[in-house]
Image 1 (tube, rainbow, N blue to C red):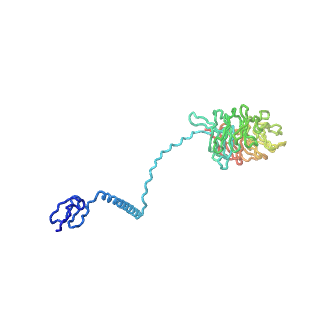
Image 2: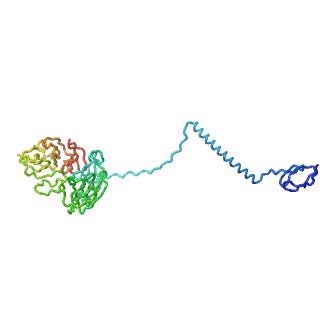
Image 3: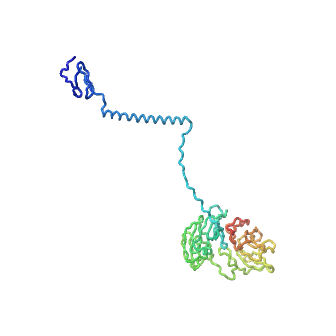
Length: 435
């Protein structure tokens, strides 16, 4: 056995002493665990891992685990997609979220009303909706049908084809004043409306208020002067009349009315106190009319160089008659009864529902059995073009004026406005209702 010589019995690694055993050459250090070979082989480091080496091993293992997990996820998704594609069906869509909406309350019912046309006024007509047909604007009363119903004074627009109401505007002021102080006119592409204390400009298509000018007192008349393209003349009760420029919304004093707006003073030449001032023809006393046997003249209307004379048969029962003269003629172009029928059927009174144009006369006449009719005759020959009844004319007051506007005849009477075609006499429609 080789001699230990100078080697002490200590661990070559940690220098810890250990006991020698006879004949044994390999030992293990009881302190650090190193192997000791007495034949001269160097001591080996212990095999136990230290704390640092363990932490390092764990950190190195983390990326491997993460990568492994990601690979598994990718493989799982791939398998799912493959199965879906292989099945031939699209992937199910997620159900949309349920939308809960609150129910809308039902619209408030419109008030039950009867529209009454103001029979003392004629309409204003213009195409409001661009359909090529004149629509109708005027002063109406809306009468509630409910118990204790009330009346609303309105300026309203109605469709010229269907006669349905398009819009309405309520004049400001007491209803009793608005009933007597409301007029409508058109000028410069707009509408002008009076109310008890002011003049308003309205947008024709909607009735929207575009401007308002106060008056010094209540209005008594609204007039578009002949030949004026931008203003209207407003007659005011206190005499502070004014001219109202529709385009600028400004006004200026105009105490003297334009000739076409002036009221004809009552005199021997006035044949009717109730003929509307806005009508193009005036009613005159038939002075210096050549005599016709059996004919007594009552009223005279002029158009161009012609004169229409309305009168009655005399002597005998008073039956309405008509005659047409040239301005300086001594004999009539024609004369006779207002209608081609048995004179015993005609009412004895003379109607003021008369109008005349350069080519025709339009006459209203009553029947003894009740009601009224309208007839159109050629102004130079007296030939009857058409003769039609006025519906509802047995009830209420008869018409006192005829309004010829744009190829139509507008006949206001009682609570209605009847509209006729002037070429055929066909009744086109009606605005207003009694009951």
